Structure formats: C-alpha cells, structure tokens
Length: 423
Image (tube, rainbow, N blue to C red; front, side):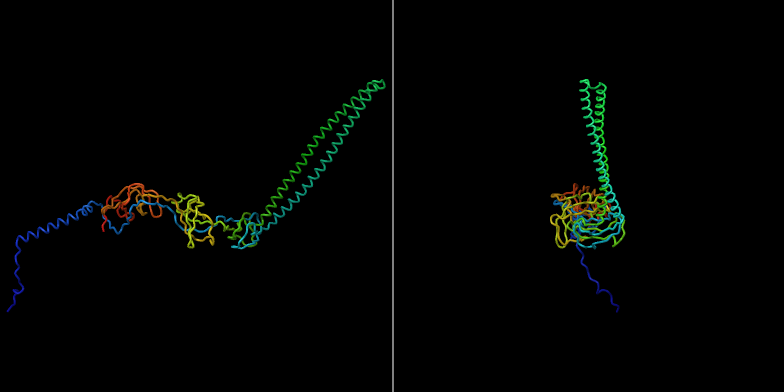
C-alpha cells in the first residue's frame, strides 16, 4: 500500500474574532507608545542638517575659574656676560691660556707682537725728547732777551736822569750868567730825547716779553701734543697684552698659536660664570605678550628656582624670539654653559574668568563661532574669544558656565547650523 500523509496532518482550532481584536489593539497601542517615545529623537534627526558620530568629536565644558597664561619650554644656560676679545693691532699672537682655563680679571690671556707699533713708539719718544730740548732752549733765549731788554730800559732811565741833571745845571748857570741860553735849550732837547728813548724801551720790553711768552707756549704746546701721541702709542702697546675683563673661564679660541692676525680680529672669548642666565625660544605669537620683569620658574637637576625675564630680543628669527631669564636671588651652583633646563614664564593670572579647554574650534572660522551641544544636537553659536593659554581659552561672550562645546572634529559639520550627534 502506498502510505499517505494523513499521519502528518493536525486540526487547528479556529481563533475567535474577539481574541483577534484584542491582539490587534495591543499591537497598535504598542506602536503608538514606541512612536511617542522616539518622536523627539526623530524630530531632532529630521530637523538637523547632518549627523556625525560622537566618537569623531571632542567635547569640553565651559567653566568659571582661574585663568593662567604661561609659556613653557626648554632653555639653555648662557652667560649674561661673555665678552669676545679682539686684536687691538695687527701682529703675531702668542696664547697664554687654553680653552676651559679658569682666569682672573686682569690676567694676560694672549700677547701680540707688533714691530711696526714698537718702532713708531720709539720714534715718537725721540721726537718728544727733541721738542723738550727745544722748549728748554726757548726758555733760555727768552730769559737772555728779557735781560737785554731790561738792561736797555735801565740804561735809558739812567740817560734820562743824566739829562735831567744836566738841564738843571745849565739852567742854574744861565741864571747866574755863566752859560748861554743855547746850552740850556740843548740840555732841554737832550732830556726830551732821553724821555722818548725810555718810553720806547719800556714799551719794547713789554711787547718783546709777550712775544717770548707766546714762543715758549707754542713750543710747549707742540711738546704736549707730541707727548699725547706718545701716550696713545704707549696705550696701544699696552693693549697688545690681551687681559681678561672678568673673572671666569676661557671659552673658545678663535686663532692658533703664533698666528698672524689683522686688527680687530677675534682672538678668544671669556665666560663670566658668576652671572648666568637661561635663554629660551618663544613662538612669535607669544612674543608680544612678553615683558622684562615677568616672573618665571626654572627647573632642572630635580630642583626649581624662581626667575625673572631679563631681556627679550627685538628680532624674530625662524618665527621665534629669544628671551632670557635671570635667577632671582642667589645663583644656583653646579650650572654649566649650554646646560638644558625647563623654563616656564607666567604671562597673566586672573580669577573668575570664563574659560573653555583649548581646541581646533578656536581656529575654525576665525574663532567667531562654536558648536554648543544641547539634547544631542550641536548648534552653531556666535562667540567672542579672548586670550589663550597653553590649555585654555578665555570666553568673552556667547557661552555660559556649564555649556558643552565641541572643541575638535567640528570640521565634519561643514558649517551647518544644526548637527545631530549620534551614538
């Protein structure tokens, strides 16, 4: 016999119409409840211009608190006073020290040998000796001429006195009838002549005396000028011995032993280890905020020291500005030239400032807007930002404490006004 499928068939009981209605009603109610629960989310999704995953974004909360602006970086120890010594004249150099030697102020570090300068000094000294002899000779001649003039003046005075006596005798004789009137007139003329001669002798003595003074003074002035030349050459010869201007250490030697150098050639450098500073490179954007006297902190070797900004370079090199900090108080020991230290400079510190963590949003759109997250939606909000620190940005307007802001990844929004943030 052929087996049929009767064993596989079963009778299904028919569902009543009332039970079917209850099942359909439950399904409709459940769908309506689910739709009501998801409606706000769906409404936001439909109203948004785009949707971006939360994992692609960075968020920060706007806070009201302390705002500290500082610059941190690495600096190196440099000497505040590191003079470079130059050749005062051309010649052959002899080094008396080596690089790294400790030296004292005034110690001879190198000597220059200049045969030409020594020869000039000897020649000018000889000229000075000759001029000194000329001055002495002029003084002797002046005394001799003054003596001759004085003798002529005194002789004229004697002649005048004699003429006066002769006139008196002739006058008495004429009155007594023993002499003619012509003799009296001759005696009177002789007296007048003697008076004129005395006056000329006196005037000549004064003029000649002034002339002799001027001659001696001119020769003395020439001698003084020559002595100044000798002193200048002596100074130049003394500068051939290169001396240390400070207590410190020999840095770098720029010439070799017994090398012939030109005038003003670099010879060596001296490092003043008693005045060390720390130099750091600061980005150009922060340079305008740096000022001399700003407080800082210098760290290294497991220690930290307080410092002050001592100088800021006026020149920008490779988008950076060099700034130097000096130690406040006693200088630490065991520091070396070019040693690396950490540096932090405090630019500004204020309380109760509205800030948000720094991110790329401050550079997008010129920092004129930010995306504020509210109920899963990022809304484009106009803001005004202020000063920036290493990790925070000052908020001037547009945000309030507690606002959640998209600080990175907002470029995916493509400038949309509202963006949905999906999980």
